[in-house]
Amino acid sequence: MMDWIREFLGMLWKTVSDQPDPKAAFLPLIPEEWRSETSVLLSIAPLMMIFPALFALTTVVERKGLGRIQNRLGPNRVGPAGFLQFAADGLKTLTKEDIVPRAADQLVHFLAPLALVVPVFLTFSVLPFGRHLVPLDLESGLLFFFAIGAATELSVFMAGWASRNKYSLLGALRAVAQMVSYEIPLILSALTVVMATGTLSLPQIVDAQAAGNGEWLARWHVFTPWGFFGFALFLVAACAEANRAPFDLPEGESEIIAGYYLEYSGFKFALFFLGEYLGLFAACGLGITLFLGGWHAPLPILERWIPSYAWFFAKLAALIGLFIWVRGTLPRVRMDQLMNLAWKFMLPLALVNLLAVALWHFLPNPLARWAASSILLAGAYVGLGRALMPPSRIGKRVYRYAPQDSR
Image 1 (tube, rainbow, N blue to C red):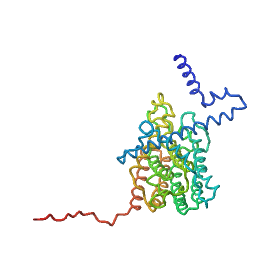
Image 2: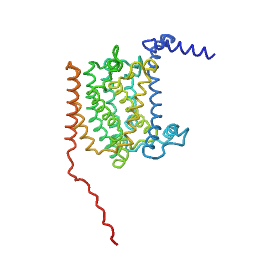
Image 3: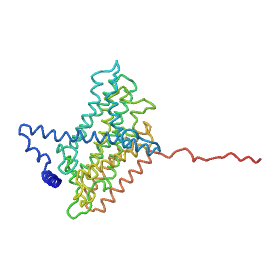
Image 4: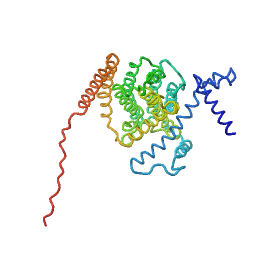
């Protein structure tokens, strides 16, 4: 019996892996009139199951990780080592009362969390998760990602305005200002990859980072000077777009209580929570696609034994761990620091990075490429950093001790 199961699984794997599209192995078994609906379902169902499950697991891992960083206990009661805490939290949000303010706009208040979650799920449809694993292969997939992702700003404003609460509205205005400010360097950092590859198709961008014939190391964009700076700008901007610490000012509890979702409770609040995490996952997935080779391994020889989708999700887990680490390490910035960083440092540096990738493209000598791009970006980084943070006038602190009693 076990031999038959192994043989069947081996044949199934060979059938799926040899197909240009894994769905092609199953669609012939479906009646012709149902094939289009089945194809859509096979593309949507994995996204609707995998990423919410990843969200549930991440909430527990993050709380336990932050507890470890801050020298305290995280979730440790529900399930083995507390890893079923997400189930308890989910049941709590489902059973809590949905309270809507009397003066609120009932329809807009109801639609705001849906307007946040639905566009985020659509952004996953153009990300290449592995070899032949692209739910929707568009020639302008990168443009589709940013166009759909911009709808989240509207949902945030809908939530703050419909609540009829001054703290909610203030939090929404903060969030919209922050998201618009950091969306510009986010798009400019992605534009460098478009200039280098000459395409807006995300699968083609991944293919451009594969190792060539005889090369033992993949050609990830992060291994170039402009790619390294672009990836760093992308991560900072993605962190701000997702309202993650240290850029979580829209929900600053010490100033505006809970921000734009102050008047939300129960499952609606859970949808906002889900939307923020899914937006972070989508941004990380795009960063992996643009700068970290997508589903390609750093060494091509490793792709023979480890599936392509495993590499993608391993990189995704590493980036999520990085964001958790940052949240537990850095304090929240002030609003003026937040805006100054976006407009006075990241935006000019992103524009300089566009010039660096142009030099990289047109200079024929590899040594000249590295030298020109590195000197340009390093000089811009140092100059903009000193201009943004001028020398402090506060003198060096001197510790004075009371004289000891001579008696």
